Amino acid sequence: MIVFLDFEASSLSKHSYPIEIAWVFEDGRSRSLLIAPEPNWTDWSETAEGIHGISREKLADQGVPVSLVVHEMMATLSDHDLYASSPSWDGKWLSVLLRAGGVPRHSLRVRKSDDLFVEVALMLIEDRNVRGVDAAALVAKVIARSEPARPAHRALQDAALELERLRLVREAIESLAIAQART
Image (cartoon, rainbow, N blue to C red; front, side, top):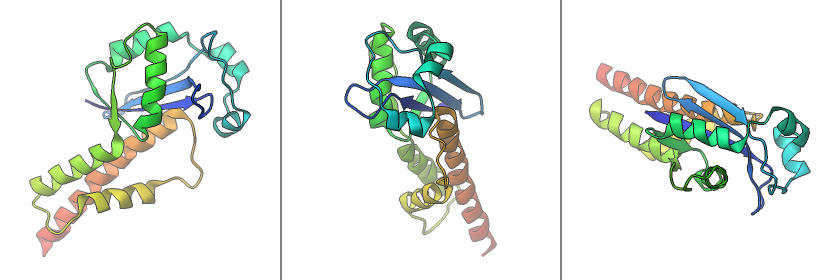
């Protein structure tokens, strides 16, 4: 099953670490966890905190230990196709988290959501025999139109946005198929 994954992090520096993870399954099931930093995770950006609104104090009070987060991820996500809007960043934080939890960093891998959206669009275009549609351009329009005026910068909302974009891509192709069938 398709699962969208997102992280919030301590910063965007080379030494950053994940502080929140969320995933949303294609069927709508979701999970969000704050992550208690490991003792050697010391990087912190006040600017990043201002964007996501997660303080060090909140992580200390509500964060789940890395080992428990990784155990749940492996049990829940291992047999699914994982996607993220920014796999270079999300993949980095996924690797940091997995390694800290004692799991090889490539035990879970993420692909780019946009690539999935184009694949789905191409499949639906062919299945529904839709003519004259550039799948990549259609996906780019869906992404642009669905971009929130004020991004949440929280993992669950960002992962849910990717699921919504998948729905919008499917809906756009279906609308085109219906319109072309009428002509």
